[in-house]
Amino acid sequence: MNKAELIAKMADDAGITKTQANAALDSFTTAVTKTLKSGGKVTLVGFGTFSVSKRAARNGRNPQSGAVIKIKAKKVAKFKAGKELSSKIWFSKEFVKARCKIVSCFFIINHSNKKNKAMGRGDKKTKKGKIFMGSFGKSRPVAKSSKNNADTKSKDKKEA
Image (cartoon, rainbow, N blue to C red; front, top):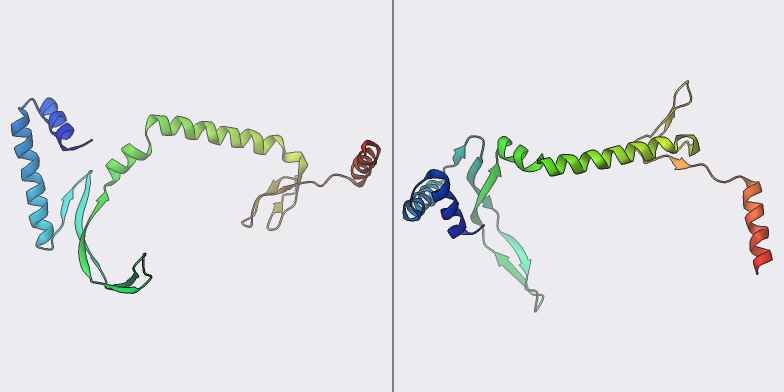
């Protein structure tokens, strides 16, 4: 969404003209700019916080020549989204539906192969024989028995 589209949306939602919406938006950006320039911060509860962050001086490189360049310290504008805005973006209906499908598929796959699991590094086994995956990774499938390996080797030799 660009500035013109935002002004049109504001005018429609508030029932005002586009010129009035443009004046309101310009007033908002001017107020935020002045506040940040003076070193303050603007907090809109539920939406987010505009603030100023200081970047330290550092050394960089010229990509063409590879020469070392000194980059000066500067102040940059920063925006941190509020809790309400973040939750509206992160937990949209489409996201929740997709996440539920992924979790349910993982649950089905994980539990359908439970009998073919071997103990992995960091895994624990309960008294009832259930295997819980440890912090070092997922449990691995049980290796095929030596009879199966011998059968496949003999089949390979016959085909060759």
